[in-house]
Length: 121
Image 1 (tube, rainbow, N blue to C red):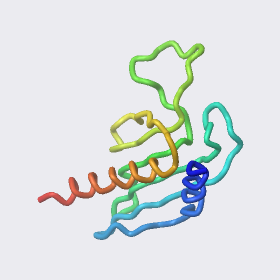
Image 2 (image 1 turned 180 degrees about the vertical axis):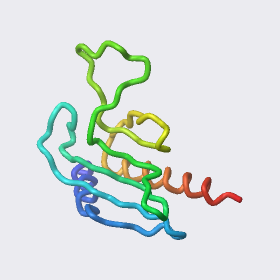
Image 3 (image 1 turned 90 degrees about the horizontal axis):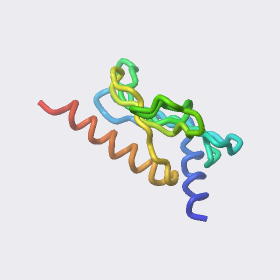
């Protein structure tokens, strides 16, 4: 029940743009999709932090699978879809989706960390 409430919260935030001051902003997209091996929770999402000129500087999403570091043989392995994008030069990192409330908490915690780092003199 609590898990479904988290999913509903995430879905209700779809298309929200949240000002983070100094021109930085967060965009949230989330919609239901059929449950699949890649998306077992049935929600496609994209949570992104953008700089003043619009470039994404942080993102959590499940739009595609990501290659696990050091894994060359994918036969029989499940590639994670939930992942985090950092700086443009970084490779996506798998994210362990537990529930939507935790996803939102983890994302906004990381937004705060990134913005503190950027604004540090």
